[in-house]
Image (cartoon, rainbow, N blue to C red; front, top):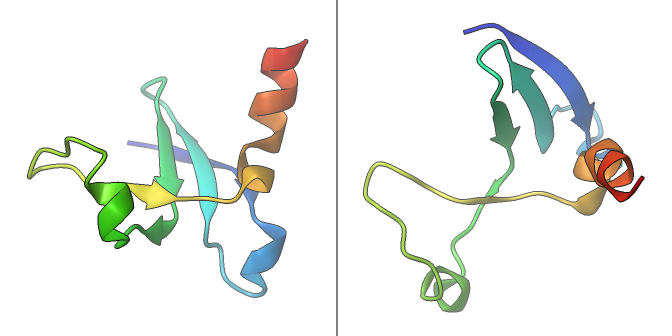
Length: 69
């Protein structure tokens, strides 16, 4: 799988987290902060082979702008 970097948050400093990547399989890879909040996790049905991450809105900015047009 080939990844193409799209954007990282301005909050990341010298790291690339959280970030958004596009794959050569027409999917996206999201790198973010692991969600550990039990109240939030309790509202989701997460299979054992999946996880959820949280990313700031600026990581998705281009996607949100493109969809609004």
